[in-house]
Image 1 (tube, rainbow, N blue to C red):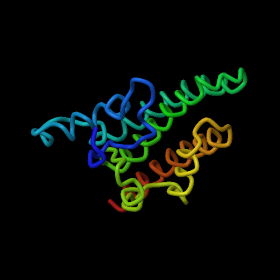
Image 2 (cartoon, rainbow, N blue to C red):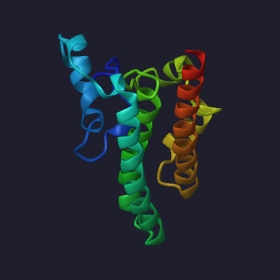
Image 3 (cartoon, rainbow, N blue to C red):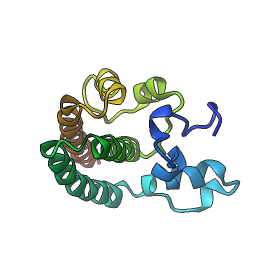
Amino acid sequence: MKKSDPLYHPLFFIDTEEPKDFFPDENVYYKSSDMKHRLYPWNTPDESVKDLISQWHDLNSIICHNFKQRQKDMIQRKMVKALSLFMKLLFWSNGSPVTLNNLKKDLGNLSIKPINIVDRLSFIMEKPSLYPSFLQLSELFVEQHKAYYRNKVMVAKKE
């Protein structure tokens, strides 16, 4: 995977997994010549957001257990998986595919996002295996979920 690839980020190279494994829909989207004719999860954010939140709840309890048992090797892996779920939630709730290679700029272009998202994500991505990173990620999930539905209500009121 080249650095110019939209899914390139060193954090998502863990053991034998690569970014394409964490973001399979985006991988198909960016590699396909027929990108527009397929239905992608970011085109149906209502369904996608519910599914991502459900996956997060399952993973959250596993990560909590890993921290209680001090299973450092498992924590890093699960946190990277959780971070990929959050990235999907963040981008898909804005109706776009995840892009990682120019993350700060792309985060700035999103309209629905938690406050200080760049700083907070940078903190998590620098040391994902720390408990404060887990707490911060948990808060980001809650805030993004609320922001998505708040935006949905605001758009409905305007119509």
